[in-house]
Length: 116
Image (tube, rainbow, N blue to C red; front, top):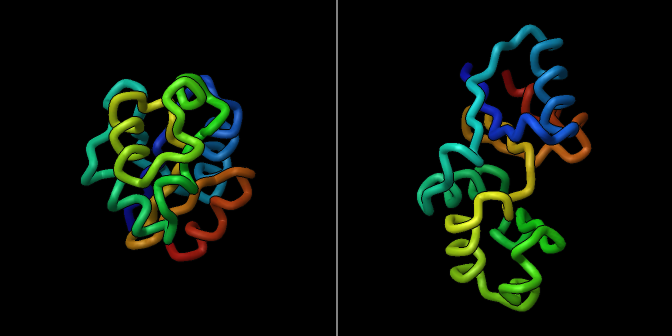
C-alpha cells in the first residue's frame, strides 16, 4: 500500500516521522507541501481521511494566522488561508489508503502504518 507524507524538511517532527516510516521498511512518497502548495480538494481529502475539521489542522500561532484573525474564522475562511499560506497547515500529515493522521508526536504515524 502507498504511504504519503506531507513533509517540511526544516521541521524536526517531519524528519522524525519520516525516519519512523523508513524504519518500518516503507519508502513513502514525500510531498514538500511548502513547495507544491495545497488545493482545496487535497486538503478536504486529507481532513476527511483524518476525521478532522480544517480548524483541527490549523497552526494558530503561526504567522499569519493571528493577523488574519483565524482564531474565530469559519472553515471556509481557514481553508482559503491554508491554500494561500501553506505554512498554516499542521505537519507532518501521513496518508495510508483511506486513513490519515497529523503525526504530532511523530509516534502517531504508527496509527496509520499499522494499516499497511
